[in-house]
Structure formats: structure tokens, C-alpha cells
Image (cartoon, rainbow, N blue to C red; front, side):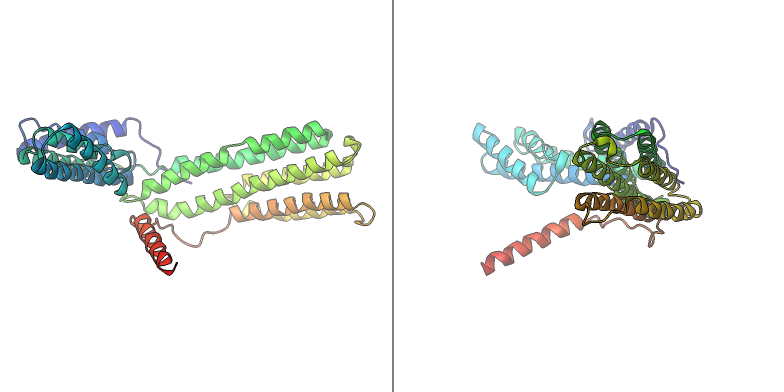
Length: 375
């Protein structure tokens, strides 16, 4: 379904090449006798994805510029002293947080202190700025030219692994139901379904594939395949939640009746086990719509059979009527979410704009100011 496995040593090779090329570029331009700041910047900005590399580059350049400008201004006014150094550190840290510089935050006071230490010398300041710009630019170009990874294959494998885990859980639960059902079983299987972290792992891997496609010239494949992967992951996540509800319904019933062995008849347990086996086959077939269609029809038939076996007069046994209803509701949701996991996506995926976060921050700030004026 997907391609794009990470090449071992790729980032190491790109980082080494970027460091050498940035040194060569700075040395050719003649920024300084030993232009080590350029390769240092290249080392720091090269990231796994193209988007992270550009973001780190922009933050690095912004942090150096901010630190240098503050240091030059302070040096021209008061020079270096213990209190001016403290003031510069405080101001640059606040400025860095306002600029949302992330991991490059400390570069603002570091650049400011280094320039302040030489009395705000303009040549030193210029060298630091130019070599930072060169290192950042070379880092971006190297990461752009040499196979930025897409991580589609790991994302597809993570979604498939999630489907396999859900199917395996359903089959294991079915096997236990055929043999019997007790309060200990109910406690165990509810704890098992709550403990899984496969959904979170699949979401992280798919998010990395989405991020790897941002600013990536090879992102066309991700735009085509991401919608189906995201749709499948959303449906499978809800299947997991439906199984949790199903296990909770089974637990509620077995703790209500005095005789735990009589919570469900052998016929009821067998019918539910057969339904879970069919659900497991359907979950495993989320990427095969032709096979899934037949399994969903079989799932509906098994659900109807289970309804007949669980039918009870609400006036005669209101608790059983409510508990069986909760179980059947979970079964219905499971069927609906299995079908949703294979739904045809609406169209190709489009990443959010790079400035979306900033635009939302501006809108929140504007809305808060308007609200303050009204108050």
C-alpha cells in the first residue's frame, strides 16, 4: 500500500555533507578566517523531515538576529557589566519566548552575550549573522536535494498492526466466551482492552508521515494515500473504543447477577463469540472492500441472531434488558466503525498552511482585545 522506508544513515550523511558545504561556502565568501559557525548551524538545523529543517533554520536565524541586535544596542549604550549582562539575558529570553523560538530559544541570549563580550563589535556581529544564514541555507538545500523521507510505509504498517491487534483481541475474547465467562474473565479482558497503546503509536507514525510531506517535493504520494490511512486509523480507533464498551457491558452483567456462571447462557456466549470472530475477519479486511462487504453482511446476520437470544421482557427483568441493550449497542457501533474504516476518502490530503498557527494566535489575540473593550 505504501512505500518510503527510511534509509539507514541518510540523516548522518546529509548532516555531514551540509557541514562541509556550509564551511566551504562561508570560506569562499570570506566571512572569517575560520568560519565554523556556518557548519555548526548546518549541524543544528538538519532534521529528519523537510518541514522540521525549514522550521529550525528560520528559528535559528531569528534567534541569532534578535540576540545580535539586542547586544549591539546595549553595547552602544552601557557596555558590558554584571547588571547589563543580566538585563540582556532576561530581555533576550523574554523576546525568544514571544517569538516562539522553541529549541532555539537559548541561542538568543548566547548570541547576545558573545557579541556583548567583544563590545558590540560590528564585524563580529556581521560574521555571526552571515555564517548563520549560510549554514541554515545550506542545510535546507541539502535536505531538499537528497531524498527527504516520506515515512508512508511505516505509517501503513502501523495502521495494519493496529487492525491485526484488534482482530487478535476479538478472536481471543471469542475463544474465552465459548469456554465460559466469569467475573475474573470480565475484569481481565476489560483491563486488556484498556491497556493497548497501538492506537497512539499508529497516530504518532501517521502524524510523522504527514509532517514529512510538508515542503517535500515528493509529497504527491502522501497526498494520495494519507486520506485512506487517516480514515482507516479513525475507524479502527473507534472500533477499539467499541470493544471497550462491549467488554464493559459484559463486566456489568456478570457483576449484577448472583450466579456469575449464569450471566449468559452457552447459546448466547457462542453467538457472541461467532460475531466477534466475524468482526475480527472484517477488521483484518479493512483495506479489501470486496471481501469486507460480504463480512459486514454476515456481521449483520450474526447480530440479528444475537438479538433473538438476548431478547427479554423489560417488565420482567429491567436490568437484563438494559445490560443486553448496552451490549447490542456496542456491537452495532463496532459494525458501523468497521465499515467506516474502509470508507472512500473525499479527496487528496492537503496539509495545513505553514502560517496557520500564527494566524490562529492573531485571531485569538484580536478576539481577546475586542472582548476586553466590551467588558
